[in-house]
Image (spheres, one colour):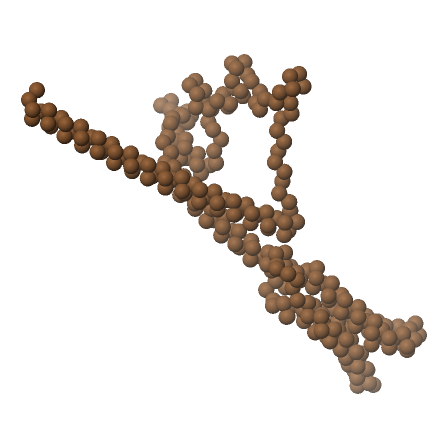
Length: 274
């Protein structure tokens, strides 16, 4: 072999070495990016788990306890087997060893991922039996799918938090409007009771002093405390920082003015009809 041939071979080997080093550097950078993406997704999943736990506590649902593992073997005291063995010595037969030679079992995958991980082929006989074959899975594609699912979970979690920050009673109303409506409704209910007392007083079942006490103090107090309890029970969002305002002075004013005003309106109506 001549010197030129040795030089050409050396250049070829040098180029191959540089190409190999460049490929190794590219693969190393790709692996670093994949590890960084995995760490980022893991942090997002942890944050989503905390958000779900917070939402569960807000609506009174605790996280389920992890399933208990198999108990120890009463004969040996060792931990129990996780899967029964079959006659050929493999756990769960074919289902326990997917991917082994001579085993036609498929791993359990979601429907969306099964099309990527397990491509099928129709047999020549036309029986439609899926043929198992290895399929290369791109980690970058899988991470992108996981990222999209995490984005979708964040979106739904944000919507759930917005809904949890609304009370059950009149969720689209402002706190002030809700309080006015509740106290006014309780005052109206007290007005109906007032009319019943007036009718009872007309037939002699209730004396004038009792009627006046209920109209001036009893029924307004019942309406006020009724509105206070309704706002505390159904006017409080599931997730809220602190206690929402109940507007006690406003409720007191509404209830203690509405019932006597309703009685005065009733008297004017009766006198007008006469």
